[in-house]
Image (cartoon, rainbow, N blue to C red; front, side, top):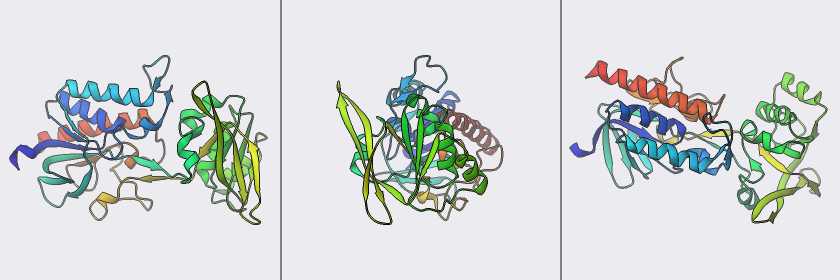
Length: 314
């Protein structure tokens, strides 16, 4: 067991986890990163990233994460493509188990992120990153003068529709019911937006597209009426999902404090969870911003919090 004991274990490997690893490795804490289900996080399913500082001409999401990983490994961090199956935070050192190994740690940084909820139709996966997105602030810019669909009925859907109307020629807000979960103020604001058109009692049955010069693109969608089952084809250039995110926190239920939707609670202005020595960074504790740059920022905070906490407890 001794050789599997570490000062810091980082669970997850998006911008939050890798930034935490960068700072802890430069502090000679020799962190171990357990990369999990989606090494590199949500950015690995994003094509062009234009809003991460330092890349004047943009960068591909997977390339950005690969560059981050290489930078971290240069400072001595160890990275394993392993899935964490169990944690025990009831006593120190903490225990972290993967399918084939058991690790112990003086401190743990959780950066398991959140996953966008998807419709679950094959065409959605086929065009993901090529006209299908779950982040308007990341990808809205690419749809200047184009027609897009936003799927959802909550505040997020309304916000995304309003945001996209800055770029798109028209935004169709598609919702399965006639009533919206969104707050009255958000609904009214969206209703007043001349570029947004509500399409209620409808679901997206299929996303249509084509391939041109080796590049996939969305060309339309089949909308199914939830009342009479009729199907209409609408020409569109992009589909944005706003049906929520699910934080990847099932592993920590019963051990760490969460809000009602499962996001980890941290002490305001810090990355401290309710358990001393366990820190949370990135989208796993952030349901508001959910950007690569904010995730990286909290990854840095978690590393500094862990470093200071370890110094105090040595």
